[in-house]
Amino acid sequence: MCSSSSGSHLLKSPVTNHCGHTFCRPCLLWQKITTNSCPKCQNRLPSYQFIQHQPVTYTINEILQSLYRADQPTADTLDIPSESGIQTISLSDPNRLYSHIPIILFDFPILPSQKIRIPIYTLYSRAMMHVAVFFCKELQCLCLAISYKPKSTYTGHYGILAKITGVENKDDDTLIDIIGLDRFVTREIHRVAEDHSIADIELRVETVYSKEPKASNGSNSTTELANRVHAFITDLSCSPPSYSFCNAVQGLLGPIWLQSVQNIHGPLPSPNDPISLCWWAAIILPVANQDRCRLLEIDSLMDRLTLIVSWIHDLETQWDRCTTRVMTSIARAL
Image 1 (cartoon, rainbow, N blue to C red):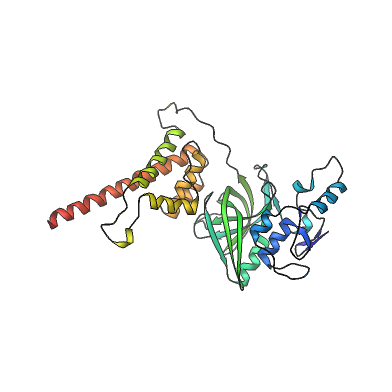
Image 2 (tube, rainbow, N blue to C red):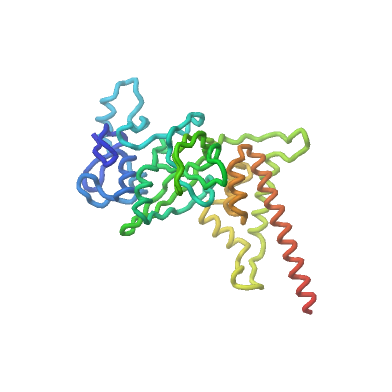
């Protein structure tokens, strides 16, 4: 039996601590976020990443699997029982409606593939985190449902399913690293508070992209739009850095800029992967949060890329105007 703080239940995906006590991997990850100590002996737990990637305890896992009937799934792929207090979500069943999911509300949207760090400073925030995490069956990891605060109704509102990738404990404070996975849409709101809501959600799992022919009305295809976005970012990386105006814009463009961006958000995706390229570009381009909110709520990949291309056009127009003004000012000064 797993006797973690989330409730006693049958062990599944067992991992053993340095102190010798064994728990379910999801329960131990949850314990790392909530108390950072072993439920049995109160010794400090290893890092979140270590627990996430730690192999299952072979002997215990073999014994557990031998207890299951031959026609049942293995212990690694079974859902977490309700007694553990950790709800399970499956990415392979995107049309399923998940009921009463706690959603953390931010003042800004989180996009797929975006990495951020959430600080947990207060007892209230820590208590909220206790109930907000749930388990992803396919990824075998803990996740959070995150959305931004809408201006009007919460029903039909979009948010992001985010994977917890790391936890750092500093005295009484906790820093949680996450990365956006897939979108969800709220279907029914049960409760709304200042920083969270309880709602029924439906996942919007992005399907694998397949090339589309050019539209019959002569508009750009998804491939052409992706190439346009990729070419714009590549051109920025090939531009000479700005050294002539002031230190605030030094190195704004050029290969150093692209390297810095990729160190944070990962490599620039290929135009052959327009889904990843779409979200990557939306993360790094200097646009308003309301524009990113609008993008998050668009289901069509072509429509999302069309919106990003419109951002690029606006940025190019703004930069052309700024360049013209600077050159005019220099000419007048001379």
